[in-house]
Image (cartoon, rainbow over all chains, first blue to last red; front, side):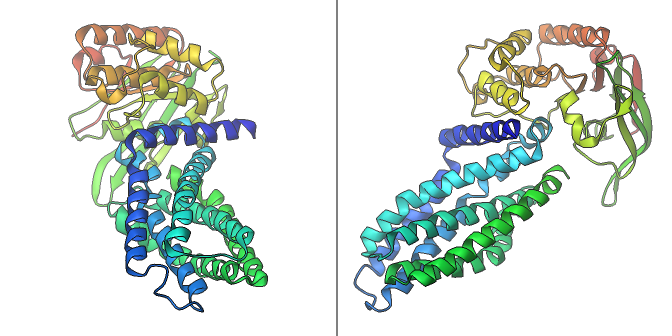
Length: 226
Length: 209
């Protein structure tokens, strides 16, 4: 187990080092998120939505920005391995499970980094006030994890396809849409102070993340090796 | 030889949709031998090499790696082989030492830094050089790939046109190194069209164009 963890950490560390030297995924995620945030805050702003609609509509906008930013950049770790012809040596050197865990770790760091910058900015610019801040943070953490798990396995599946850009969105969306609905419900609950809604949404998000983790762990060695 | 790997392949064929790359190729490489795969461009040398090292599945036929008297599971092949091929690159954003350190960590090599330094010195590269591989000449990048392939002291080495981009001195060193590996009981499979490299071999499999 410790050997597997060491291998996975080596993959994550290598991905972070190459990413911070090229900034391909960071630029894709960051530019998309900040551009959409600027557009939304300029056109909608904190006062153009009626007070009773704010918890729900601002939750929808927040998760749309996070989701599409994720779709813009979270496929890069696998696609880059194929494009730069480094994938075969990685297949020969590392165990498939370590590669999956390592890539998942990298995507988790990217998505949490994105959230750490984007969410406070969004709350300030859009004047989004939350009653249950702790519940909101839990929704973000669970949502980020589930998002990273789903995009990691889809990225692995599409990495060797020729039309990988379009395929990533097409294959990810059906898996992400139910997650998106629960995350919006949970965030709305955190904004208007409905603890029961937050708890129910959190259960659903954690369950989806858990199921996708198990499915990915079983599926990845086949996807990666053949 | 306890550390050797016998690679045996029988009736191996590969087809991509309607394009037949090759039909019914058989052969074997024993510990202490250099098996040379030759053939014109497009005859499938690199494809056969990828099949033999487990990166591709054949359309038909069998490949086995016999080690310590038993057949190794396909998923375990990666532990006893090293590969150098034009279709496989190291990480251009990392320097040579960072590349080797990464491969050493995922292979679980102990005393990784020392082993990485030895491998780089073996291929004539300076372990202290901090230039990313992107800034290397093609010959130096080829040396990094060779250092990566021998880092874990594999029992079998697969070389696809290994002398490409190497200068004459580098090619001579590589020939001597491959000879030394065979003498040490390692198995070497070499895909090449270069006459200078063909003479390193003991056995030959010729693919038709």
